[in-house]
Length: 74
Image (cartoon, rainbow, N blue to C red; front, side, top):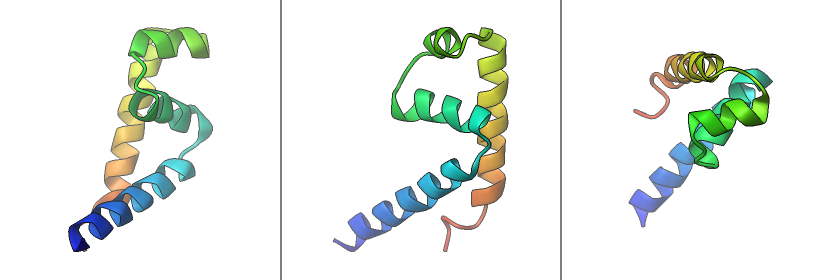
């Protein structure tokens, strides 16, 4: 039961940090990880190139890693 609470707490922390991202980064994270769309599908939805989606996703991951650095280890 305690493990379940820890996992739920980590998800909440990650979710809050995703919501703090700028919209152009948040939307690719949500579409890729939560909606489980392919990069090509995201590019079509957002009307941008595949490389743009890849770049935004990479930058968003880096921002989240930086922001979450020690939060999940506590």
